Image (tube, rainbow, N blue to C red; front, side):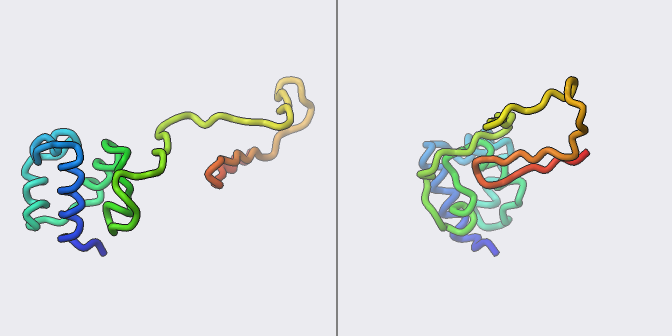
Length: 121
C-alpha cells in the first residue's frame, strides 16, 4: 500500500526537479490540472494510470522510488528503451525456411535482461 503523504513528497520533488508548476506538470503528463491539485492536497490518491503517465514522460523516475521511496531520484540507472524492436543476435546462422526441408517446431528468443519469448508452431 502506498503511503499517500510520502507519495506527495516524492511527487513534489519530481515537480521541483524539473522546475515546473503543478499546472505545467499536469500538462506534461497529460492529466487534468485539477488531478494534480487533488493529489497534492491529499484529497485523492494517485491512480495506476497517473503513475504510469509519470513513468512514461519522465525516464529518470523509478517506479519503486515513486511508490515506496526505495531507490533514488533521479534514477542512477540508464532507462530501458521502450517500444524498440528487439535485435536478434545469433551465434549460429539461422536456417532459411525456404530452402530447409525441416519444419521449425519452436523459436525461443532470449533477451539480455534475462527474459525470453517462446514462439511455438
